[in-house]
Image (cartoon, rainbow, N blue to C red):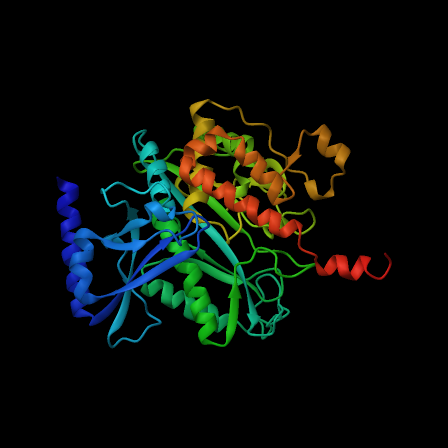
Length: 448
């Protein structure tokens, strides 16, 4: 009863804000299975009805949604996600709300990625946990309309010189994110030319998934308005580091960080260790979700700071999982950093599968292996085998085959999305493997 009263209050708040801020259009946002942002617009005159009854749309054309014969869907706006789009005109302005996708009979649609995350969060809420995440999304700026990636600068990591010509783009992006209620920790130039990073302050996983989707569109909008193209493609330039999305994560029970133990040398609790063990044990099963594109595996290769080795450490950035030491001994800062995801994933699904793997470790009391502090990039195959260090799948097809065999991931994603995702990725792989690349033309045509 209290929840319904709160929802009604939020609806009244949204209606008042829309009127006070002269909003004319409201964009209703949701994602398809692959994490592509979808939207349609209503006028403010339809807002009250939309908040009460939702807005109908045809779901048969949305990737991974429904067949034609069961295509009617309802987009139910979440009033807590109402925000004005600051890059749109202030007169007759535009706001947005994320939506939950419903079926006409009032049930949550099983193909809605946002609902998948909500279900996984509900499971751990029953155990007393809240899941917090802080992703580091990297991306590139390129000159627009050149038909190929052309960088804006030749800057490097943390450069603050005239080489970093995109500082103003980052500044404006952060201001817009702030205007939309999304807190930013810091921003900087990344390792590769024209590569950048803006880190969001940690939030509960659902709020952060919405924020990550908003972040991607804000970065692209600001870039486009300045005659630049922004991309979250994992590996757009041969020979340079790709773009990752390291995900810092922790579980809280009320105000207490369940990963923290002051008496442990790593400040890691038993639950924290079991969670890491779950990530390491099941990562091969879910990497197709966190790294879902053919191009994702061009980034996940040794030699480019890419975390391909299934191991963990504190200081070692060549491992897949790291326990950061930025603030040693501080309870709220204790967290696990999972380093292989890339920023082109579907954050609702990515957060869901990482959480499911970690919780499986806690549930079954997995024992965590010893940390690997030596630089794995410098080890040969024999030394890695002796240390028992395995690697992630090196292509999308192998990753999808691992996913297909995982009952844990099927349970975490739900049968609908599990099957639709795999079906879609098999099609993508078939298209890719029959495509003749420039590499083949340049290397084989002259000699064969």
